[in-house]
Image (tube, rainbow, N blue to C red):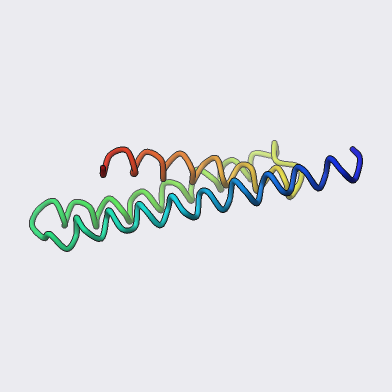
Length: 95
């Protein structure tokens, strides 16, 4: 792979990571509003937050331990994929 392609690949990864960071911030805000409203929905959301974090971490750990990820770029892509799926699902659910 040429130097130019490697730079383009990492630039794309940085863009994707930045987009995930922004989406995660939006989800945090939506969750904050739900929790601040109180009640059973707030308690359920707090429980769900912890459960989802553990599940996403375990999913990523299994993927990385599986031996199919062979480079730092592939590990980054996999992390963005796993966490991105969870963040996007929460954003849709919390709207």
